[in-house]
Image 1 (cartoon, rainbow over the protein chains, first blue to last red):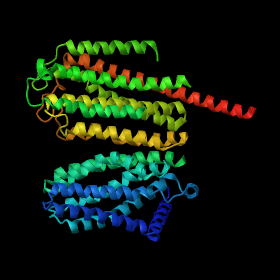
Image 2: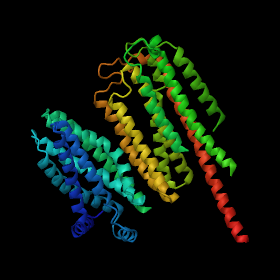
Image 3: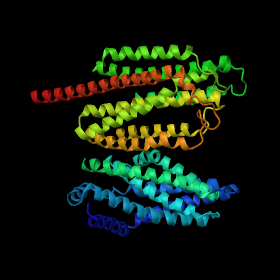
Image 4: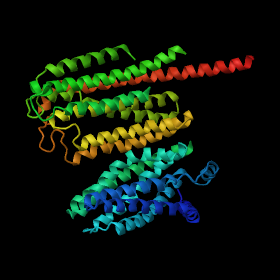
Length: 221
Length: 68
Length: 231
């Protein structure tokens, strides 16, 4: 495991992403489209958006954005290119690079997405802990979806498969996220929110640990 | 075959509760009588039916194998 | 399947059904006699979890050794586990309807179990999506282990620290602490063992069918080659 190679891999991914920005733009369009639909729907119904509903809707938008963003994290690697990576970097380095890159991508997309969502559907956020929930949410999406994307790419890069595989696996994290976020919107005690967030981090650590053990087996096939 | 089995299970899963829901409010209906013992009967019957259906699906596979 | 295994499974389940209906149980409000479902509904979850653990074990073994039969065991264990899970859900819905008032109460344990089943249905979908048998076995073994790592906190950890309608939580009468000590354990433990043994029996049956099917396909392919060589 060499940090320099990991950084080189991350830089390669970032460069590729920057060069063919259409993927990034597409995702941003996706976020804004979803937000706009929610905005129009709420406007039309003429009713008020409750904080609990606002929260759930945001996490659904975030979830779909994340699945779409992560789905292509292994799609760029075509067979020959993969063989080439195999010779220069170990599986662990590749996974680490992908996780870090996906986290960065998720942070950017999530921040912009939430900015849009907040702009269209403003709601007073009483506690800074909501931002912590957002941050941890983006990180946990990136952590667990990277491995799922690798599995889906080995199964022929089927985007339907990506959704089928990732949703059930993500539900536990999503449940804790929505609960923590809605607690912080209700300005609940910090201890309550902290309990959820610690639990979430523990699940993330388990998921990442398992991913590190399993990824070499997957990569070799 | 498997798909048929799963859809059957789903059907059971969807129909049984709604069939049970029809007599919800009153306490005097049959399944609540005798200290709710018939609930246990219904549960055991469901398990039995589910397992038998699964076995039938395996049986069909074997039949297909025998034919070839 | 050994004869003693089959006989002991049958005897255990016979004892569970007869004893489950006839042995004395504690008198509790709300659940009344339906407390006997402990011998039929609860073992479904135990059986499902044990089978999934077995499946995870076979997936590890497959990744280490790469024998096809190990993969067969992993899939069929998941198949039977999903069957048990669906049975657990539907029997739970019946039971819940008569004790909690509705088949679906948004109870965390119920929801988590449904999600758990969804995860493993996704495993079966993944297997259907890959054509190459070697790759299918390998990729699905990896997903199986990943799913198991998510499934364990899902079933055991998450419901434990939220409010549930299940016994012993949220003001429901508990039969987990002292009531179970007396007579119910005499039936409950055999019930868990018996239903799990039955699940394993079914799994082995399905595995053998799968292996026969593969052997037949091999023979047919072999014959085809011979015919082509002759002509």
